[in-house]
Image 1 (tube, protein in one colour):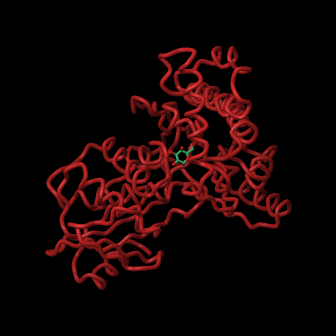
Image 2: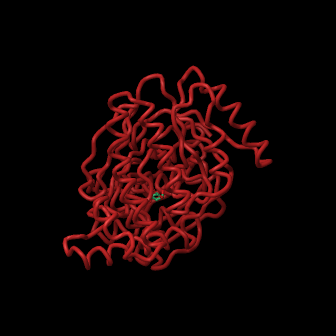
Image 3: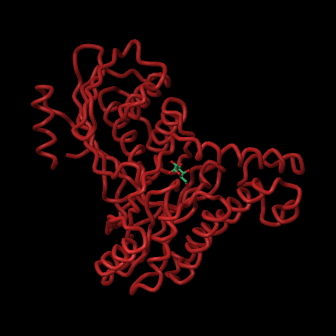
Length: 383
Ligand code: GLA
């Protein structure tokens, strides 16, 4: 659906003319499962977006509708549900509830959601719905939050209403992404640096077509395991508040004092933080060999220590090795399925896509989807 079509569809449904807000999905280049440990991540917003068309309505109702997803949802603004409904509309609804909880008055509104971000592919389709809905709902009121606050509010919606204990990465980059740049984000202070993606490099995203679902237990279990790790380290050093505070030396010193599983999880997070800082430096210097090496190490660590990869992701990562123009690749996002991200020289990107699809299909019998992406700007209103 293009935008005039979205507008027309909105007019047909609600007999009104909408404003339209867009928020992108993302790929994460490196820094995986570090955000909720107060660590470092380096994502980029990509060209897939969610669009929310909105117009105010005179009654105190929130009506949420979508082309792609089933159902037309209607809620009274004065008694919004306290518990998730279990449907896709929870992402927009959760945001409305968090806006109200933070004292922002929202008006009655009709919303039409149109999402192009592949669902369950680890490209942050949920964050895109949340951020676009937040900007849309805020546009009807007086108060505007700064974008980092919007990101935090959307994260709260997902944590407290939807029930997935995600970190801040996806919402943050969906809000603040910049064309041609990755963001090196410090998830504790929310300070960030733009890291230019060298010209001539494409972000080639390969979808294993194995769906992942963050709301199911494994993601939240990993968070608990990290928290358990923090409790151990805090006994040895009371200044430790998160795995971010644990140095590689401290990790080595106490490796044998931790239960083996917790040691593996902590080891991934502590070293992944260092890899992310190193990769940002290498990318800035245009040292793609080093970036590739760090991405490979990141994948191995996610596979062997954090245990969030799966056979299909491993096959897809291996399938990239040796292809012309390939600089580095790894799984991206929460894991258990979804996509890999690959840095590929532009002139080879088309051929890379063809060959990796063939290799993957031979090994798994699954037809992958491959997206040739560039880093794009974050969320905003369309004029
Ligand atoms: C999901 C979450 C993010 C982050 C990644 C793993 O995408 O939404 O907050 O934790 O997993 O790096």
